[in-house]
Image (tube, rainbow, N blue to C red; front, side, top):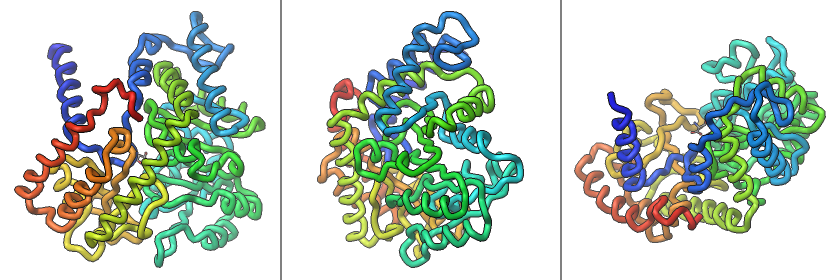
Length: 412
Ligand code: DSN
């Protein structure tokens, strides 16, 4: 194989991204300057260790970049300490667990089907081999976290760590209530804001740094940055967190990602970013309303974030079939479990969509209106291949109006 083959495939992917709508709730388009930093020569360097304490020579510039990233993210969230080296959100969560728990300790976290995350001690994660996990769920009537149930489970299970947050919970989370439960039961509190970190920066979600012992997040979702994870914590945990990341659970840091993170944190502090997040939430609410008007069921009956979880319960289809139908129309989404799902992870009863990417591209209300027609058609007629292919023309036309990178990503 010639290396050109891969470069050509990258061009093919660029075309695919430009011509389709990415409604995967965990993905976004970073600023071009971030992409540039991300694929730069700084990735040639090893820099194991931390700023001023490296195991390699020639890390003067790397130190400056990581120092800027750490300072900026601390200021952004009002945190005492930050570690910007985790390669991903899962790595960040693992490092927090390894920093404070011993094998056999207990974790209380949100059930995956109710919106949690695999890395929160789900039976499929490595954490499940080391720690005992109990999950809390949501209220069957409204799909929202039942804080009294979390409290009762914490009193009974006596966990060392309680985790708030996840990857498909569409509503805001009351971290203060989690803090109170942790104080009552003596547990550490980890808030995983992988999805909502950008909303926190924009002041449109409660800031967990006011309540949590540890906060983890990823930089590539609502933060609109490079792929990667971050851990925030109080100074008193700084040493053990840093040790748990390197050398505990990771080797050399990805300097190019850290350079991208530094730019991402700079942008996230601007008024333009705040306005972008506001539009993300507005678009999510508009889309929820339009889908409901077209008879589509939404878990929790709406959203406070960019995440919309469509329920296919009581229909004769499943998330896999709808995901495939939407892809034929040029809309990317992902099948997802919903609370109390009777299906399986491969054929769950939900489909998760989000408004981060389309808002970055500047989709208008009219565009969202058209998308709502296509999504509701796919939910009701996933087998109609011709119908979906016909609708792809509409999607391609909308996409052409809103290129991702042609304007140097000047528009947020
Ligand atoms: N895979 C991410 C998501 O889709 O939310 C979480 O790790």
